[in-house]
Amino acid sequence: MRMTVDSTLGARPADPGAPPLAPGAVPMLGHAGSLLRDPLGFLTALREGGDVVRLRLGPRTAYAVCDPSLVAALLRSPDFAVGGPLWDTMGVLLGKGVATSNGALHRRQRRAVQPAFRMDRIHDYAAVMEDEARRTADRWTDGETVDLGAEVFRTATRVVARSLLRVDSIDERADRLAAALHTVFEGLYRRMILSFGPLYRLPLPANRRFEHALADLHRMVDEIIAERRAATASGVATDDLLAALLDDRDENGEPVDEQEVHDQVVSLVVAGAENVAKTLTWVFQLLAEHPEHEKRLSEEVESVTGGRRPVAFGDLGELAYMRNLITESMRIRPAVWILTRLATVDTTLGGYRIPAGTDILYSPLAMQRDPRAFTDHLSFDPDRWLPERAADVTPAAHAPFSVGNRKCPGDHFSMAEMAVILGTVVQKWRLVATEETDSTARIGITLQPRSARLQVRAR
Figure 1 (cartoon, rainbow, N blue to C red):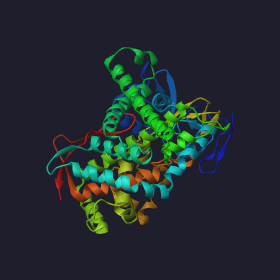
Figure 2: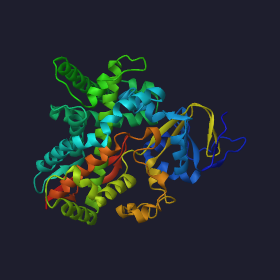
Figure 3: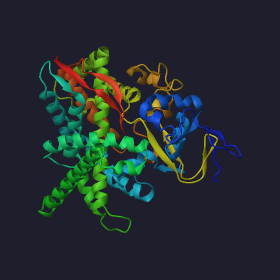
Figure 4: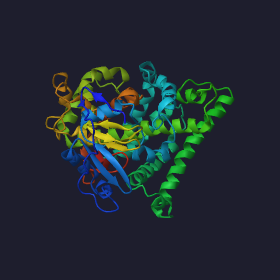
């Protein structure tokens, strides 16, 4: 067993044992039933059992880490790799792209994608972000009820496709991608919690919908890659992320295989469309719930832009309240609410023995709503991120783009995209809740409101 001492966590005991079993396990299912019925409440309550607790998920055993400082140590430790129930399940969708790979493969893949997210390149993408934001805001009519979730997913998909992949013929595919990902993500969550493989091979309607959507998603990515290869063969040169992926070489200097290129594109489309869209959907929902914050945001945007549309990339440095509002939205209503890791060696964490091969899970949502880390932890308060107040926040409790070598390479891209879309929408529209609006979280691999149908009213 590797024995470790971490100055921030204290010396490890000489003979650590297993963490306590969380209450509520039932025969056969263990804690899986609780994770299916009320996962957010269940994960939030786990902290009452200790900093690390043991879970049973059907036939599997997993450990849940509930303390933010321990999660930070976990993410930076070489003893834990990307793996566990979430990533095992996501592998069906993402394959071996940069999101799911480890070790030397991950380092090489990250080097391939990182240049596309430099600040100077993000500046180059700004025209696409601004154009798509304007298109979105201009599609609506005064008094119309709009499905904000569907709208911003389509917008985010188009931004990724046009900026990172230089795919201009994305209109019909954006709708197909949205429909496919919606079905796939719902099915993936069930597969993560209840990992009974034979169940998902039965010819049930839900299984058939999942397989059809997954196949359609992969088919669209193959179409995009094939079109680019054909354009390159005809002499059309491009300098974008897709070109870099097609030119990437493995550790032997050989071109990477077609499957790896495919998996890299899927990873980037999913992260760039799914996570951004879900985050923005929550932002719009929160603005409808808190018109006082929408008013403040609108006034800031008007002050910075002077009414010029759309909000430009160059405006973002002056939109301090907007940055704080997006940050607070990601804290209280995160799109990514559960993550997992895999212990690669016998080690310890929080004073407990962690055998090699153990699945570890933690919940960003539970940490970000932890009263030990945040004052008035359930209040939507963008001003908590003002410099004079942010010092009171436990840093490890809020890392929406992760940390260390797993930090999302597209964090600045995503923040710029969300700010441009959000600012452009609030320039033109006020968002009002309707009878159809439902802020109850709909559970999947990511979180989204059950219904984000809002009325738009002209300013």
